[in-house]
Amino acid sequence: MIRRAPVYLLLLAVVPVAAVALGLLVGGSNLGAGDAWRALTGGGDQTTRAIVWSLRAPRVALGFLVGGALAVTGAALQALVRNPIADPYLLGLSGGASLGAVIAIAAGLGSVWATSAAAFAGALLTIVVVYRLALMAGQLLDSRVLLLAGVVVGAFAGALTSGILAVSDSVQVRSAMLWLLGGLGGLGWSGVAALAAYSAPALIVIAREARAMNLLALGEEPAQYLGTDVAATRRRLYVAASLLTAAAVAAAGIIGFVGLAVPHLIRMVRGQDHRGLLPAAFVLGGAFLVVCDAGARTLFAPLELPVGVLTALVGVPVFALLLRRTAARQTP
Amino acid sequence: MNEPTTPVFALDGATVRYPGAPRPQLDGVSLAVRAGECVAIVGPNGAGKTTALRALLGMVPLEAGQALVQGRPVASWRRDELAREIGAVAQREEPAFPITVREAVSMGRYPHLGPWRAPGAADHAAVERAMERTDVGELAGRWVQTLSGGEWQRVRLARALAQTPRGLALDEPTASLDLRHEMELFELVLALVRQDGLATVLVSHHLNAAARFADRLILMAQGRIVADGVPARVLVPATLSSVFGWPVEVQRLPDGAPQLFPQRQPLPGVRS
Image (spheres, rainbow over the protein chains, first blue to last red):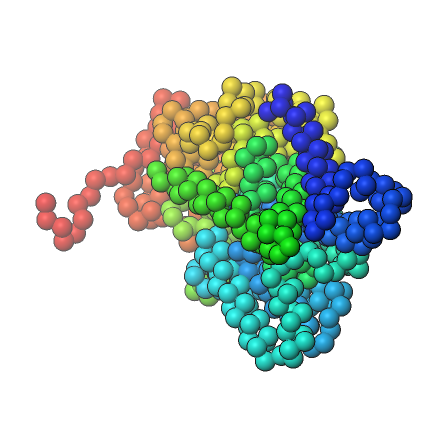
């Protein structure tokens, strides 16, 4: 482990830079590295500058922040639920957040700041409902029941979302449908600003709890004996996770599996210490989504795939792998 | 500094009632454990042993009475503050993710580090020393999921020692251990108590082992303390027979430690 550390750290630096470069260069018109660099630094021709500054750069920034936020949220939820098969999508948070956002859109509050706030409310409500539902199955919380409850509540929120869209104004429906499919194209710099403003406090809260998350993974009682106020830590982490999910969903719709695949791969390579895991998850989650988005723009150009299609193509096999490992651990 | 008479752990008329329960789980219990003392809480299932320990550690709300750590109500301690003074090992613990023995023991330093500070030389030294004393140094690189029951208990004890505490609280530390590992663990705990002057309170099902190692036994039944004293004063046939609902006799080992033996008694209405 120690011997490989420099390689790993180098990867953490190189992969995001390469992903960002890819995100800036490919798309409807492929740019040369030199042109893109001149445009970024304020030179070159006006068309290239416009493509880079108004289309590509905000899209890459948004993708990076959304991917990072989702991966960090996934890592935090896995420690909270004490199960590696947890992410904002499976726990219903994404569904609840998008329901909140759609209600805001249907009510005519279309700005990303308003939809983010409404999504936050939706996500918080979801986590409460998911917990209540899981606790009906018994006094002690079983993480598998919790995940099942998350999937059910997520599906319920999805049904309500469809219902609201079906009876809403056609203009609003169109914008909501596009956004729901999951995409990083529409929002531009204002989306980046809203996302950054909503995510920053949540990321700080989660980073501060990295050691507490290591302890939570041991169990509630040991965590308490090793100095964590478990109830307060849980509350802070769930609120932060809801806020991050909400900000990501409001900015880019529902994008699944980033929170599952990225932290899992880091856990496999570098172990479970959340102090290293969380920053790595942010950086690699961001890079992962930027690369997926570059793929979504170019694979069927000029048509554009929803980026969630690509994250699912990577995420579902990882999910299967995780299921198999969990099963292997439980068989004596 | 504490007054030498201030107990590290104390309950004062502590009563605990779980919601909806007909009788309190802990019913006006008072006890004290001082530095350099090893005290075992014993008694039948459901007597309130673990509840008493959890009350001492501020893990259950009290309906009446007080739980004090170093003379201060345990509820007024911040959890990290408490973890710098008291090392506790819960009955069960299953890490959700694979971690190594060294990682597990290092977590004993968390209460001293807070959220941000990196471990320094003193922290590494405390971890090494704790692993050395519990003889888990050779396991340092192993995944904790691959350890035997006895090894895992020693690792958790090492983690509690890495906290550099004044008091130890152990819930059934030998529950799933075989004879040798049970004796090893008790010998280890007692050596720590004698060397460091740790105040140690443990819950045990094994009266005979407890009677040989503990300075004092606290016998509980139905949420109350039935007897509290040196093992020879607590292991009395009449008391034990009524508490456990089965006739027992008590004999002495050559070193003077009392040991109890359940008597044979055919069940009424069961034909042999």
